[in-house]
Image 1: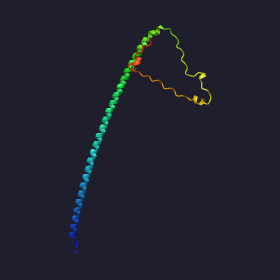
Image 2 (image 1 turned 180 degrees about the horizontal axis):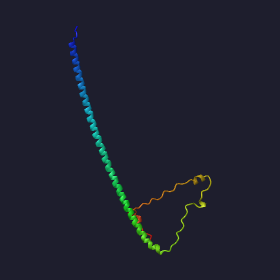
Image 3 (image 1 turned 60 degrees about the vertical axis):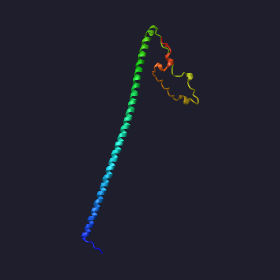
Image 4 (image 1 turned 90 degrees about the vertical axis):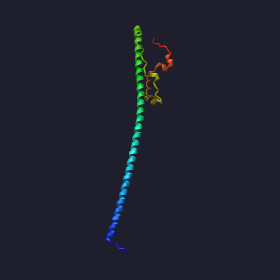
Length: 162
């Protein structure tokens, strides 16, 4: 039988401590390596995400710029058309002043009433409740200036204002 001596025991403990120290060092190096790899991967991912965000932002900036340019062009065209319309109205007003001055003043004809006459009133029969309901007003016509070049038929007509 082998007896353990304190010296033998101390040697075994020292050997075990050295092995444990080596294991801990290896684990720390592996952990540092994993952390370094994770940080590098996170930096690469962040760089890719920033590049993608910059690309998307640039695309949207270009699209927004194109839309703003188109809107400004439409606004300038609208302003120019409105200015031409105002000039045309002033010329028409100036042309009609002498004609109006030559005519004797005549009262304007009465405007027709929008209310139905008594003969046009709905009957009080079965559908009376439906006919008394308020009907929505028709939408107003939209005034829209268009150059006569867009309406070839209208461009060839002579004005009847003279």
